[in-house]
Length: 163
Image 1 (tube, rainbow, N blue to C red):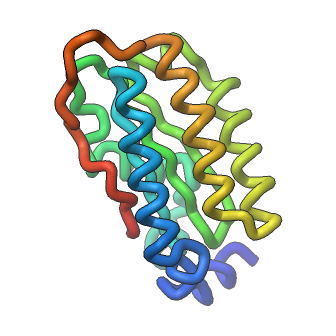
Image 2 (image 1 turned 30 degrees about the horizontal axis):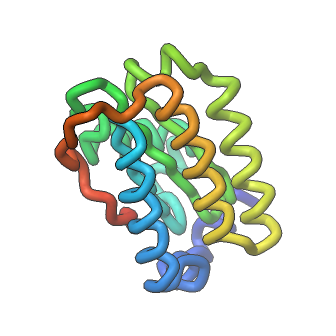
């Protein structure tokens, strides 16, 4: 069944769930979030895995780690980069956090945020799901990496990644 979902999930699914207006809203929300802490946040959405990845049994978590690496989310001054990854064909959200923030927050908190987002996505609330998830991630980053008095550079683009 998973194979069929991925085969019939094209890029159109991303654009239907995340029109340009929604992507701009998410980008602005990430910018607002990053003014409150020393972390860097990326949001990536992918309609489906490629056939080779499906045949190899790549999980959404494995793909998220790959995207985290490819997008260099780990390459931040405070080791506080966070990737929110959505695989639409599986309706699966994964959060991959750099070691500096992950050690302070832990897997249980990240998983809770992911499951909350997935519930909203199942209800068709894609923009609201991302914004609420981002708000929860922001709270963790504010707690563990509060903004300093001096301004920090934006180390990673705030624009959502469409894969």
